[in-house]
Image (cartoon, rainbow, N blue to C red):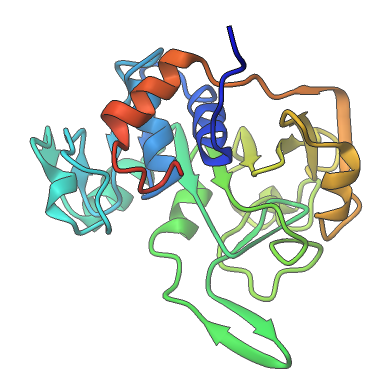
Length: 255
């Protein structure tokens, strides 16, 4: 039997899906977070609750959708509330197990910038974070999917949009924010988690074919390897079939 062929995005989606547990309440963004959550629901976690910040809960989407307001995403939703209903009535009551986010930059303590970047002495503004700041503040766990480049995995953010562990150690708690249980960062090179001592990011698994040197050269700070760093497990044939035939058949996000 030949080796299984898969794209980097498929590997990232599968890796992220395996972090999710059955029965969890998950606030999901579009793209790979959405694909990963649907894969988990179709495999090991059939009872997770999918929540979009716009207020859509447990839809049976007919298509991955091109925006959070795309009605194809809302098809046969179990419940429909509002932006305030999601963030105020669900998230801020502490009912969200996982907040799935993206961003322009993330720093060594898991803080996220999704607002502006500085290039050649100029500032470039983006559309903003939506509910990301609230989601990272009140979710028990925060998972981030981001491309692994030195300009994106940085020592210092150009702008702080969303709090991770701020300056590490207990600074998040000292600023009055609830301490989340974990932050996981899934990139195209590796998976990073949080060092329990100083609350900085450290590598937990390295994707097949990637070296430690690749990660070091692509990271904007001195990145650590956690004890027992392993190789990321590859997708199974069934996971790839579900991604390609049921969840994202047009390959909008997994190619």
